[in-house]
Structure formats: C-alpha cells, structure tokens
Image (cartoon, rainbow, N blue to C red; front, top):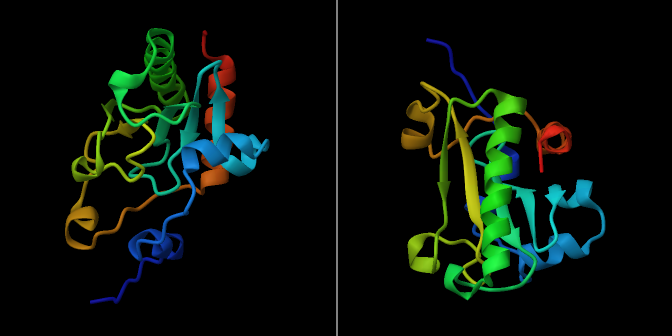
Length: 164
C-alpha cells in the first residue's frame, strides 16, 4: 500500500490555538486593503469576509462593523443588512462554486463554539453532495482545493455580479 501524505501547514496556527490578540472583525476592515483582509464585499453596516480556516472553499462570515457580541444587541437596520448580505452570499457562492446546499449559523458565546465571542458574525458554509469523507472525522483535517486569495477573487467577482 502506498504511503500518502496530505500537507496543510497553514492550519498549524489554528491547531496550536494561536489567535490574534485583537478582534479580527474589527481589525480586518480597518486595514484598508480588502484583498489582504479577505473582505469580499462591504455594506454600509456589515461586510462579508472569508474564513481564514474554512470548512470548505467559499466559507464566508458576515459581520457588522460594530463590535457587539450578541444578535440581540444589533439595531434593526444592522440585523436586516446582516441577513441581506447572508442572502447575497448564498447567491455569490452558488454562482462561484455551484454549491448544492449551505450551512448557515451563528455561534453565540465561547461555549457555543464562537472563536471570537465578543463580535457576532454569521457563517455561510457551502456544501455539496458527498463532500464529507473520513478526513474531518478521523484526521481532523479538511481538504480544500483552492488557496484563499483565489477564493477571494472568485467571490469578490461573484458579489459584483449579484443583485443588491
């Protein structure tokens, strides 16, 4: 039997639990360089950003610019834009990747799995029939066919084509 290795060195930071000391949902929009920050679309009160440690290619997060930790703290217009950009994300990912389904969700609080519990954000994860195999279960490894800069370009272009 052949010995196969799958290398994912970019995941080491995540696996070691090293996290930025600042809030990524506050610092990334402030960079002023959406390509470097992996922000694929900006709205007036919310924006769409690639997940740096995605479950699948095209995994984005929708977050308000304002640093709030709970959905209940969002003003109605911000909550409306959060949902609107989530809906646009579905269309953009569908166009760019041909997703057959989605997981959409918010983890509120650290015990619920929120990596950045102090800044509410909604995940949009594209899914395809048969996309889960033994790797995530046995090897705690996800196989992604594309680099984040390529994903950023695809989704930025797909958002530009999406109806507002």
